[in-house]
Image 1 (cartoon, rainbow, N blue to C red):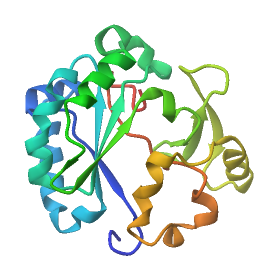
Image 2 (image 1 turned 180 degrees about the vertical axis):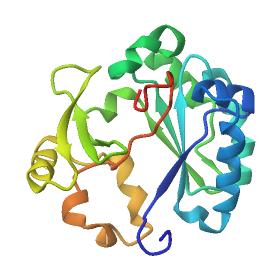
Image 3 (image 1 turned 135 degrees about the horizontal axis):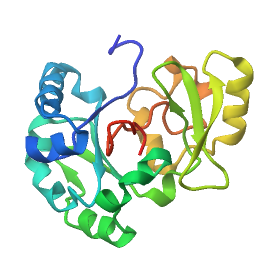
Amino acid sequence: MLTEGIDLLGLPLDGPRADIHNRMRSTESHFGVALDRLLWLRPFMAKIKINTFVSKFNVDTIPEMVPLIARLGPSRWSLYQYWPLSHGKTAITRHSISDEQFSTMIEKLPATIDGVLIEVNPLSVRRLTYPFVSHDGTIYIHDETDDSSYRMLGPIFDDNVITELFARCGVEREESKSRYASHGGLGKMESKRLDHCENWVAPEPQCARSVPDC
């Protein structure tokens, strides 16, 4: 499936050590599980993207992740500024960082790491550019009037829902277009349905256990 049907697969890694990552993910064992999966996927690293959720809790440790990212060797490392979206608002005190804090951290990182592209995703450029798809196939998009909310569109297999999705989801960001270029574009993934949105699934930092999309 990885070689034939997937352009890019994202896995979470939110810190250089277990104590940082596990606290971000609200579980004691997630860091080990994430590393095990990444090592198992080593033959497919050209299609692997590591997603890192950057918040007040881990922002100072992000530069320490550079050697680990270099050893793992994914195609890219995507850094996402904390977004207090929906239930994620309950974690603002623990996780919120300013645009300046996020930018200062980015300035401490190299442009690339042994061929790994570093993709920077501040909050300001992500809004209204991609949908969320829940585990049951329900599609959500960012609310047009409230930066901290999203709204449900309906099931992914409903053609009317898909039509509305692409009418409301903005054009793909320049920062994201290269995600698919090395695999011959989006031909394998129904380009007519995917060429206007950044990604089907948003990163899943659990700043609270019930918040998969903060």
